[in-house]
Length: 266
Image (cartoon, rainbow, N blue to C red; front, side, top):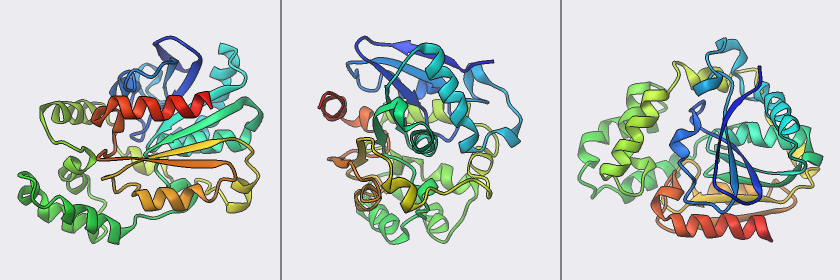
């Protein structure tokens, strides 16, 4: 059975891989009103494409699902956008099917599939830069636990405000909606120990224009990490969206929309 999808907007097609990992695409909204026909995928095991065996959720196992959808939809070549953890799928897809990708947009991408671990110094600096926020005292212990290497879901849930530039009512509602659709053990299944890591040699041969869009106050990835990752791609550019966190289309839709649209139109 093929992937379910939603279509929004008008213009040239843009194939969209959600993050999470393994969130249904509703949390993306219309991506700040991008002037494109968004093909928002429900990945294997999520939304209307679920459920699935946890053993079949490792990120590289989604690649041929994406290719089957692209071929069925007749999109060739296609612009591909991935958010956060979805970057692992999109990068692996571009490596396997480079002739089908016109341009690749990685929005606040997870860099785990490139072999990057979390930058603990940057995480601490990011945390301390927001220590005057009214919610900070309530999450300080969880921050310290995460910085000490905790993988506990409760600790990571407590630091959710850091993923938003403004922890206002809209951000809290967005976070609740994301939490409601999370799959149990999603990260462990998605980033399984035997998942492939893209090598510098593989990436050096990828002849596809790549945009990495980082949030100026995001820590996963930090702007510095995004710049470092971009150097692995031979045809890359980086945009740092000022004041944005992990969901930049929520923080400043116009900036996000213009940055992505300019890259796709270039």
